Length: 114
Length: 114
Image (cartoon, rainbow over all chains, first blue to last red; front, side):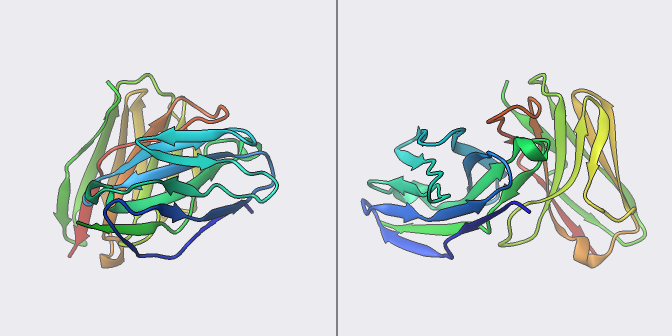
């Protein structure tokens, strides 16, 4: 079945550091890929998405590129802020699976120190 | 309005109680979801409603009973729960099952079973 693997956390960075969170996937069809963010005590918010190979999703300084050849969708940000501290989930939905199921990775907790 | 509203935000219930969680969206979305999230884990899909009909039940125990009274409302009826059912229950909605369709999440109901 479909699955998402993302790097274990927690990740601790100083403010203005470069962030990379790795994400790889397996899917039977041609999935859409997402990054969701969950701030403490809240639900999940969509951060960015990509629907086809070589698409780059971007939002709030975060970027991720859909790499079909490496089945990856790594999240990057050039300069993190304390307010970026949260849990980040890589996810996919597979139209071949009906498109209703969102498969989440385990989540990566990010701490940013001032 | 891009919100999914869940009530209550917190709920403590005994193992013999009956309670209900409520979810509402006014984005015209035709798919609505219940997820369960344990601490430091990703959300796990429980139920999917599409056009007010139950389309996916992820083998959830019958002590959880979903209901979709209309296209804007989703309920989760709880009865005879166990302490291990304590978790954050998230409601989500989406436009449907198209490519790249993302889910919009509520802030969740934090449920404690005593």
